[in-house]
Each structure stands twice: as structure tokens, then as C-alpha cells.
Length: 213
Image 1 (cartoon, rainbow, N blue to C red):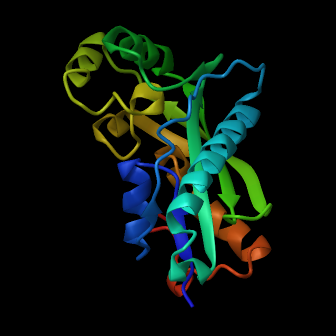
Image 2 (image 1 turned 90 degrees about the vertical axis):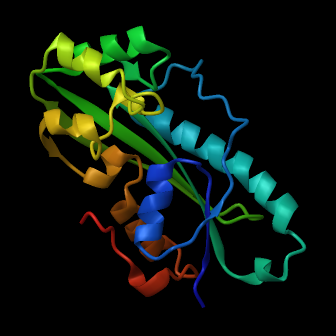
């Protein structure tokens, strides 16, 4: 029996990646979760903390909506993720145009890290796995004029680091070390490995692999 996949995210990139693998997730965005960090956490700790926080929030919504659903008997796993960019400090989504411009100037002609934390939760139980993946991304040089033109598009605004590796600004990436899907914000290959090793009750459609692998 194919398992039920619940995605605690409204990210088009995460949804599209799962659908490309033939998976139609139940989408329960953790819209009420604050991403502010008041604790002194490392990059890895921060993304795992936020991923678990999002997962637990969406789990409550899922249980309230599907508790009486007959299909709730189907094995299910809830997946939540959080992604940040790190270069001499954490970089999240841009606050405004000036913030996005400052971020892109900070990242150019150098390398930075993209970290994604993931939480896997079996709804209604204490079973969970929390882990992270890190990719180092190297940007080429680019001009202030190119940044200004890019900021006239809609691409930067909902993305950590103000860019998407699969988007227009990805042309400025010279190379990267690590997982491509992690930079997208969803390290699907690693997620599948953890599920296979520690979640034998979860069956994915045709043992799918990432379409970008």
C-alpha cells in the first residue's frame, strides 16, 4: 500500500519536486509558525529547530482534519523543511528590495552555504526523525546593474538568499558541492534514504528518486 505523504509547506518548489516523482502530497502549510530565532543556534541547529517546529504545528492541523477519516489508517509521514543561506551569519528571505540587493552583493564572487533542516513525523505518535543537509554554492562575479534588473522580477522575494538555483539567477552559480535538491530547499535523496533506513512502514511510489539526481 502506498503511504500518505503530508507536506508541511506551501513552497511551489517542494510541491513540484514531489509531483515530479509521482507523489501527490496532502499540503498543510505551517502558516502560523514564526521563523524568528531568539536562541543562539548554529546553522544546522537552526534549520532543524525550525523544521521540527513547523512539522509539529502542521501535525496538529492534520490530526484535527483527518482523525475521523477512514484513510487515516493508511501509513503516513509528515515532512517539514526549513532552508537558510549562511555566509558570516544566517541569511533568510529578503525583507525588502534593499535587503535583497545587500544579500546578493554579499554573496557575489564567493561561496556560501545552503542548509536545509528536515523533520519527519508519524502523526499521532512520538516517532520522528530530524536531520539536515548542507551544500556549498559558489557564485561568479556580477554587477550592481544586473542585481538591480533582477530585483525588478518576482523571483527573489520568497527565497532564502534572494535567489533560486533553478531560476534566472542560477546562471551566476559557477559550481556547487553537495546536493542540488538541498539548494532548492528539499533534499529529497537524503529524505528517501532516511525513510528507507528508519521508516520501513512507509512505502513510496515505485521507490522514487529525485528527478534531479
